[in-house]
Length: 162
Image (tube, rainbow, N blue to C red):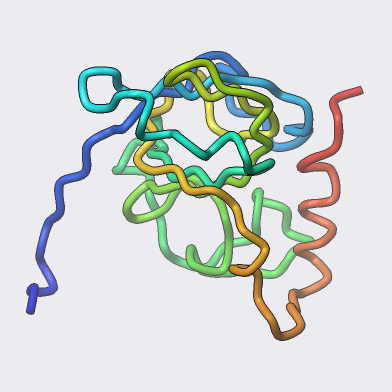
């Protein structure tokens, strides 16, 4: 069994190209980018069948987050004092202990190892660590609950920038 101090080495499988190059909190709907998979590690067979899915789950590294700025203590989301303080694991922000992000995005098309996507909330040149097709069967079966402040926080996240 691994010890509590175990370290794991992950290698990027690809890179986000395009989209935003600066973090913006909201309006990610319609932002387009390409995930370019590493051609030195993969051939087109690695994505065979992926084009039958409308959405992807993408695991990526918040590589521009300074590890020294990571905090796990409770604080209001986005620094808004109207929202209650919550710990790092009760939010989706980028200042996480392992700096991992998970996003669901639309798959618009494929060209070899280039996956054209929309709504991916990762920045240009972000390292991609894994990709999975999004399947409804992995959605929770039981009702999902969340506090009202989180709905307020996320109301414009996937709204089109107007």
